[in-house]
Image (cartoon, rainbow, N blue to C red; front, top):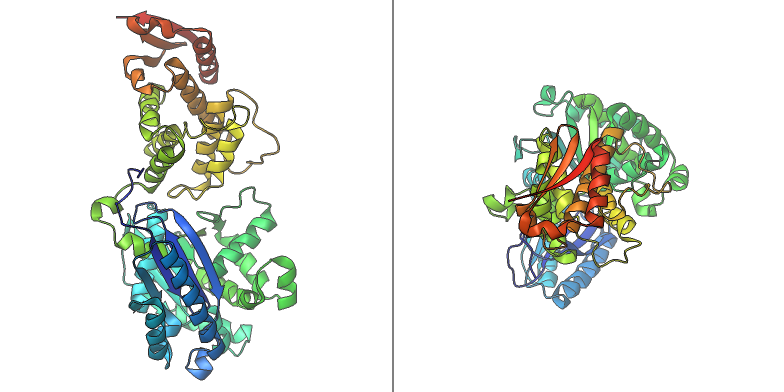
Length: 498
């Protein structure tokens, strides 16, 4: 059964990204506004190692990459992929033996390989960010092993021409002779050329790339952040600079004690940290927002119709989820409409989060009743839900917890301190208890809620039932209404009309 966010395809979609440091395959279920990854694997081949000094792709890295690509081709074929989109970035486009490598890759992958220009890479990275963070406004920075791409975004669009700098960690190490101070000088001179640098003050840097994600993981560990979801993780400017300075000054052995990454990746981290620090100082950007979406997601997003691209990724994902695990997204939409009179003063953002919570409020119906609340909370909080920051993600998860658990106290072992302020926690309780009532009035046939009404009248929370539905009133409904009224500080009342 295909969800509302899907374009019908004959099979899954494969994207292979050949970078200077890694080669990655992602299989997506189909071309959709919020595509689900079926398979995701990377190999650290480092084909761009020593590019500055040699001008050529690394021999050992090339051999490993070709072996990896043969495996990826087999995986794609076995899983019914008719076509692989293969893209290559800085190392392949700049190396003297790049064309020879491309020819061998095309033979293995049985199709063309697209060697992206720096400007194309910047644009696809920006589209990837916008696919997962539609409200992004600021500077997108995509740090690969061989280059750094920068481009501005605002109001759901790429707003400037992409710029590319040869400052990927592998290439920067080579240029600087593995000397951090020389690398700092190189970066400071280069970043003076950033177009529109004066407009970046106070805006966000949307950071794309594995090396920057590793920095975010370190920050999470150091701050004891309660949620290990990188997408939309925010690091304030001062903390990002301080972290970057510390990491850039560490030896390889020291870093091995701080973070668990491969030996091949760890040598690049100090240079990735240095790039971040010097970029923040050059632009006066005030925060770093981590994006799990980049070139691969941007490539898929670029293939969508304008109508599909304009859709809300949070709602498309929520509806698709309701198709997979719930009894259809229409149930949640009925609940959302039923609860509207209780939330007349909410903002557009608040309404969007409430709608997503309502659409997801039926995904636990197959779980054991004793575990529905906590299972759904964990699923939503730790999912790949796009288009939502950590605060709204937590609100949605908590609302669905209360939908199943009622007024049951939230488990103390689930630390969410810092993710949700007290006012929004109360809002989550009200949404959850409202959905809990809605699903009890007429059972899962929520279309009948259109004949009922819920509203605040003075100090009362009033549930109105039509005469033909009068028998729906019962002990359970009265109890659920009392719980919901208590969350609003009101007295419950049920009336029959018509």
